[in-house]
Image (cartoon, one colour):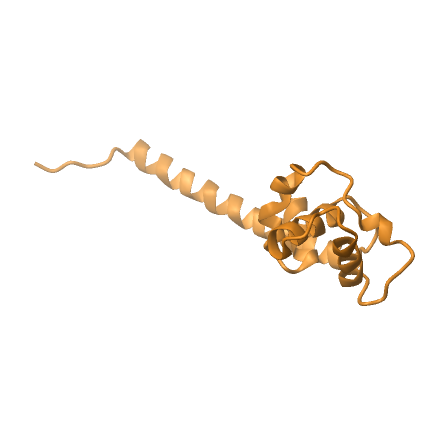
Length: 122
């Protein structure tokens, strides 16, 4: 006795696979475009303070509100020169916001982390 998958089920499966692959390709392409944008745009935003605070807490065990974490964060983003705008990298969110940024804190490249964040938001 031979059992065969009905043609409608096979088409539905192929359509579902095509949608998933298309969605993944779209996400990868969007992340790539966001990476290009973030690597050229160094304007102030709300992502870097939260990302840097999450990295300080998870990777170095520092309080995300600690001055050492903020100074180190500002140095890493400014290319080693400490500007007078260190305060713009301070975390102004409650501590539980670190949980949202925790997966992104594992990405060491700040531009890639911001590109992934932008893709998630989009």
